[in-house]
Amino acid sequence: MNYLTNMSFKHSFKFSSFGPSALIQAASQNHTYRDFVVKLTKTRRSALSETDKFGWTPLHYTAHFGTVDIFKVFLDHIDSSTARKRDKQGMTVIHIAAREGEVTILKELAYNFPEIWDLQDNKGQTAFHLAVERGKLDCVKFILATKLSHYGLINQKDNEGNTALHLATIHGKNQQIFELLIKDCRVDKSARNMEGFTVIDIILLKEYGYFEKVWN
Image (cartoon, rainbow, N blue to C red; front, side, top):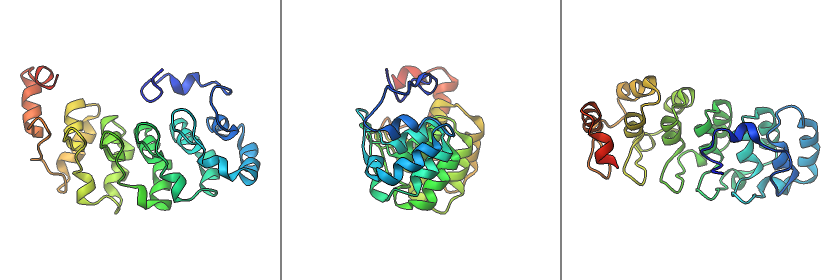
């Protein structure tokens, strides 16, 4: 199972399926195990930085499942080193939160750990890339609005040379996101990716049905 892209994963999680700690198993339950988690974090604080076979910490799971209450419990017991933990795809908790559209968790991370805001994963993608690529409008709005998002982050290129605007154009999952980026004066509309395409090039190629052929 591809745990990052299989959308049924959120709904097929088995309580006993994952280790290494009980905190990881409880992270998918927002209220059911809150009291248990509170007690356990006090006695096993180190478990919050432990990872499973995917490289995920309990924090990664709270962002994936959107268990805000549990996330806030964890937040009181972690430091920057835990927030910076990367999984096998180079993703930190901020990448997972943006990818899943968990804007409340994203805001908490921005406030508490601004130093992880512009980290890139193994594909060279930031949280901004992922929020745009997945069409998570609320996360995109927050990222554009926060002072942490400097010009460099907004126009950061991934390993294929794509900016967030490139991804909004290529994937087209949310027209409102595309319009937000186009109207934002900080967004570089003339940036070229590794294929040499600007956003205008991609729009024209898609319009005439050539984009998929060229891209593949």
